[in-house]
Amino acid sequence: MALAVIIMAAGKGTRMKSDLPKVLHRANGRPLVEYVLDTALSLDPEKIVLIVGHQAELVKKATARYRIIAALQEPQLGTGHAVMQTESLLNDFNGEVLILSGDAPLVNAETLQKLIAFHRSSHAAATVLTAELNDPTGYGRVIRELNSDHVLKIVEQKDASEQELVVREINSGVYVFDKRMLFEALGQINTNNAQQEYYLTDVFGICFECGQKVCAFKTDNPDEILGINTPEQLVEAERLLIASRRYPN
Image (cartoon, rainbow, N blue to C red; front, side, top):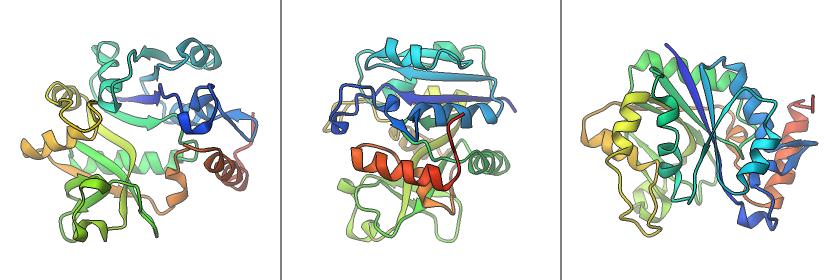
């Protein structure tokens, strides 16, 4: 089965206190997005699509040495809207789509290989990479069927019940989708939410409504799903990258 990878790299990164696109902040001497691109390339995908937005030309120039296609998200109307911008570039592609974040440099190729293999063996329409955190505050919770790989729902913290808030399994923002199902579902989501944006996670709601199988695959290493939103998180990611021996080329 063929694989395409979409990497989200359109964000401004307001909390980084810098006008530099978030994915171009450096950890251990390299832009964050390079770690993600190297990991994506190691999976030998048919296509890699990089979604650019804030200072798009700067991001394209910084990643010019990579064998990728750029999709422009302008204006930026949410994560679901970002992935919508890739549809025409994947017209001639059939297979599975892996979605990664350009500001999450620690995700491991071996984990992604296991995630994709699990997705295929489960015959799922969508699979979410999860992690169990001691303190899941701020993350969307993954609610599973009891003793099962099947996901019943993914709920944002602000919408979670007291019972759901006890759950420590969280949504990493890394997903594998059947390509056809992904874009069909994206065509059905809307902006009826507080942010008035298209949320990629609303695709899961469409899956549940249609009786499509959604699964969860949990990583044993919660550190690798760390996304970077603040200078403090960048320092922590740099420490973890050095510890994992992912040095600059």
